[in-house]
Image (cartoon, rainbow, N blue to C red):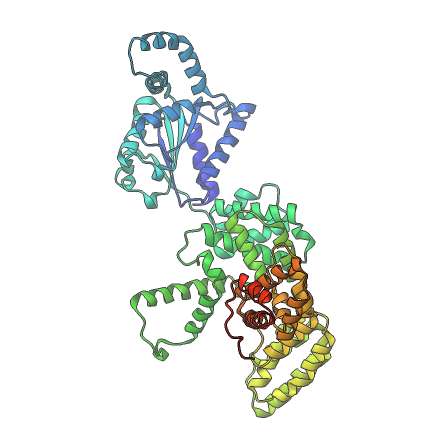
Amino acid sequence: MSLEVIKTQMRQFLASKEPEVLAVRGDWGVGKTFTWDQTLNEAQALKQSGEDPNAIGLNYYAYVSLFGISSLQDLRTEIAFNKLNTIDLKHAEGVKKFQQASGKFLPKIVTQALKYAGISAGTLVDTMFASMSNSMIRNTIVCIDDFERCDIPEKETLGFINDLKCKRGCKVVLLLNDKVTNDFKSYREKVIDYDLEFKINPNETEKLLRKDAEDDELISLVFDNCRKLKVTNLRIIIKTLNLLSQARNHHNLENYSIDVQLQFIKTLTLANYCFYGHDPDAPTIEFLTDIETRHSTRISRLMSEKNRTTEVSEEESLKEKKYKRWERFLESYDYSTTDKFDEEIINSVISGYIDKEDFSSIAKITEELFNEQLASQDIQDAIDSFYTSLMDEAQEETFSKHLKNCIIENIENARPKDINNAYVILKRLNRKSLTSEFIDLYIKIYKNSPKHFSFEGYPRGYDWDIDLYPIMKRAYEDAIKIKPPKDTFNDLLRKKDPIPSELDIKSLEHLTHIQIEELIRSKSNNEFRHTVKLLLLLNSHDTRLNHIYDSTIKVLHIIASESEQKRMLVEHYGVMIGDPPSQ
């Protein structure tokens, strides 16, 4: 049923004075309440302006959500208390009548209450309003929302709705998700006069929410992605639009390239759908960032059941099928790997806000990667041609030389990914000798640029080929200009909280036995204790520094052998001195 047909039925229901019940059924979040409120407000505006005085047939309106309501009396009280005048939907008629009644009768009630012990004024007021509520609910349009979330038995609630219609002259609109109800289907024939299924397409969902943003390209992109995912849940779309607004207004999203903006919106829409949606074909949000599981799922999809070498349990088989279904879903959305920027967007959806510092730094790295990718398109095209052609040996030879020359010609635009992919291809084709020239040239050109020797900013799982890794590791260390180990140690010693960074660890790996002895012997009385303590604790931060602990113990044994005072000093630090260890 189209949105306009649904709204027409709602308008006719509002204009009629006949007591009747309209049920609007649909999944959670598809816009039932939103559309009802919109239609009601439009009718109220027509009535208030005089353009159509009969747009709303009755004079009073009350809205109540059954979420958390546990008794029919609470429901009656909520309806009476929420009663509004339909001329402007602002004047709370229920509150007004309660105030009038309480002003007239409360003094007498309180006087009587004093005669009876154990009765609180609050209980008396509740009792008084409960008895008043029955008489107040007449000739009113009552909207009852969240029928399926109610603690009252559905049969009792439907009986109450029927009573409102038959005995109190009310019109009732019932908003519900009938897929999770128990008694609705059994009794709707008796209670419901008009039964509408609220099921609209993504284009109509967009029409509900667009308002005055028809020309906003980024909002249009959100709805384009929603159409691909078949998202019709208004709450999910609104959450997506809210985070987009936050990114634009507080994090300057539109100052980044269009590629960064497209990635942000694509991942944001997907992450919200996975986090808040109920689609069994859509993956959990955790699956998006589980690189290992996603990789193994792709491998498994390429293998037939006949090629399976190990038996799997029924539980594992079901899990595999689920993961494959999720991976197909992501492929249909054209979502492949999850990089650092995607992870930041996904974390923003989970936390509900965008971290300004993290977003800014990762978005800048992502933009640089996009720029590099554009600049290295010739290399990418050459690599892509390898995976789209069947080649004989002569063609392999021609291709290998072309790839080598292409990288050399475009070396100033080459990325780590390009170098690694080309190396892997030539290595597998037994033409590894062709790689040395472009690798040496790449290292020479970028010798002062550490980012060209690491995969920071790339999706997790990216790394250098095992044979190429030592070469690029050395180039990276040369590029970051690791400080001499003694300088690094002295810098740590001056810190209040001397926790070594990765660069510190790479430097301290080269701290020798002789340098450790020089550090200990060169310190003043005040620095000696801190120096020894730090040397003995460094290995607790990383096992690559175990040699520092071992050398420090040996140095302390040597110092202890020089005099009794030095021996006592060393033992004071918990180092038990026996015979000095062998050198």
